[in-house]
Image 1 (tube, rainbow, N blue to C red):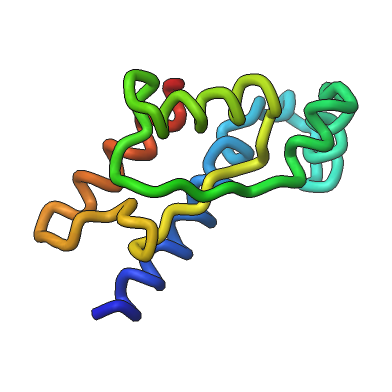
Image 2: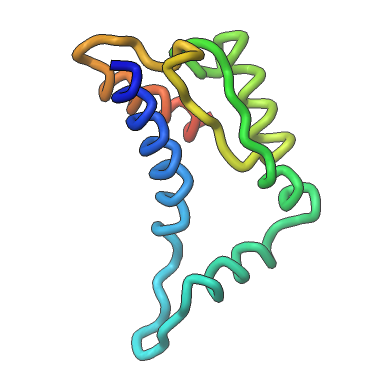
Length: 116
C-alpha cells in the first residue's frame, strides 16, 4: 500500500512541476518553438533571486497548506518571498489521508498551494 502512495506522490510531483510549463504561451502559427527555447525564455524573465529559489524543493507536514494555518503561512512565505521551485508531497509527512478520497484531498492540497 505504501508503494502505491509513493508512486502517486512521485507522479503528483512531476505533474505539478510540468503543468505550469505546458500552459505557457503558444508559438505564433508557422513558428516552431523548441522546449529549450521556451525554457530559456522563461529563465530570462526571472530575477537572480527567483532563479536561486527555483533550485529548492521543500516538504511540510500535514494535509493542509491554506494561508490560515501555521504550516500554510510558512509555505506561503517560501513560495512568495523565496520563490521556491516546488513542494514535495508525501504520505510520510501526512500530506495524504489514507482513504478512498485521496485524490480529492490531493487536489485540494495542490489547489491551496497554487492559490496562495
